[in-house]
Length: 114
Length: 244
Image 1 (cartoon, rainbow over the protein chains, first blue to last red):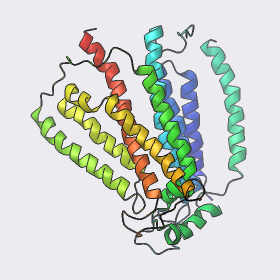
Image 2 (cartoon, rainbow over the protein chains, first blue to last red):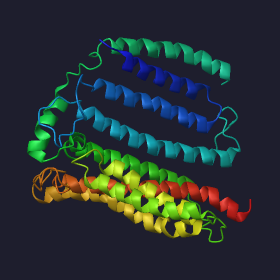
Image 3 (cartoon, each protein chain N blue to C red):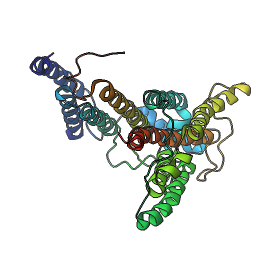
Image 4 (cartoon, chains in turn purple, green):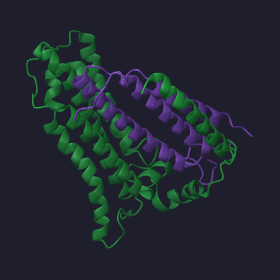
């Protein structure tokens, strides 16, 4: 019985949320979101781990060899791609906010203009 | 809302979240005891049935192909969003003094461009054989494109890193995925059916029509990443050119 990887995933997630809530800078906030999202990679990969299992790639390996779950790995791949593009979008929004409001501190942006 | 109020609201919410998380964790199998059947079924069938050694990519581009199509369009939409936010009418600056002074950077950077693009193409091509595939290879190809800016400076880069070149490539990548799916319909098969047969297992020709899906993902990811870089670079370089 080991829950350590799950505990690490929870810790990374909570650290990320804390960073988002207390952030004073939109760029820092976007990075905290990345940290938080990283916990989902850890959780997914940890759930699919099989003790003693190899990678789910059968080039030169006998079929039926014990391996870790490929579905969660495919999901993690999806997760990373979405994370990267959404971060790019958030950073572009932060740039725009800086142009409009002259600051990237979420507390100092008093009003949102269309 | 002041900082203090926000943290005051956050702490009880965090406690609730923590409690839910602990409750959820007590119900999952302990680390290393994964029981779920789907992955194990895929591992048994993907090599004999689909001729794909890499089960992760067999899942991504073939068995779960329709999900990956949705994901491709998340990528597409996010990049369009960035472009809409950052692209302005000011146009491209042609008079930017941004030359590369170092010969070492020029020589080794030029070599690295070829190497990065080659590695990227290799990763995409062998997506169903070894670790890699369209997304990973696409990013490697894009990094080769970005090196062009490092090596040659802005003027040379902007001949290649502009929307006239990149927008169509990106659209071909995203649209190609759908076209391959629709091609199956023409043959009377369900959308995105793998209709070519397996091909030669363990070679770049394995995977059937999912091989084309893999390549279209690679093309889209490469173009999307270069486009993102290009848009952010414009943001940085145009103010310099205007002297502001």
